[in-house]
Length: 335
Image 1: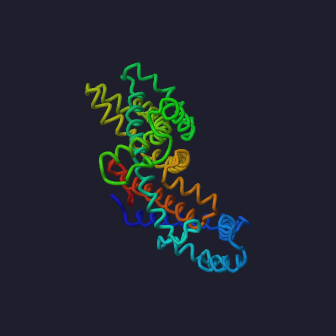
Image 2: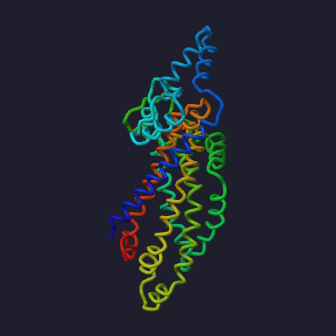
């Protein structure tokens, strides 16, 4: 099913993508003339009413701790070593906490919101698109075609604004922002879980609606092309049951490019998740990215970006490896 040569090629491609992303991530912040450590120290001294004498010495000391006083080539090599070891040092904005600890605190919220949203959107969008593209489906389903076009064209954060205005501000059915109530105690209990679900409902709906429309339209197009194939016409002529033709012949053959489209849209979905989390003040990676950009926390921004790139690369590799399970005609080996 898989050849060693193919696996090595895919792993080599993954390493190349990671190296390219690490290089770009390292170079872009260096184009900024601002000094994040000096700005943080100056802000702390101003807010605390402290004497700014010795600010230069403190900035130099912290620069040595973060390795910012080293030559550019040495900083670049250190950044590559951080990627290999998954150790991104200390957070500038939340010092002395490490970047890994800050990311680990926010990761479960993003995984819970993002993965659940994209899986729900993929399953519902695929089923809906398959029904829309099947000529024997009920006519009333055609109503969802313009609806899907509308939701897929509107950005997720705009949908989030609309949901906040209608369901949180006007109807007051759901909270405006946050992951749980301020008075709630984080614990594994039914009451706390329900509170988390209530807070995650609106951001999840914004992501689901945004992704669902595109998934439905793409699956509909694939089904329209599939139903015109000779094997569908032949199966219908043999007198096979419509349900069997729909599931085993039409949906199964249209599912492979649908999964490919899902992987290709992961980057856009991650960007949308970041914006939605920022809009709803959700304590995930989106809020961390927004905060790290504002305070120039390069280490934290570098760590989050590399983890997201690594996640997309791994997802692409996994989908490549499960293709033969979806379509037995696919073989990764020598002809």
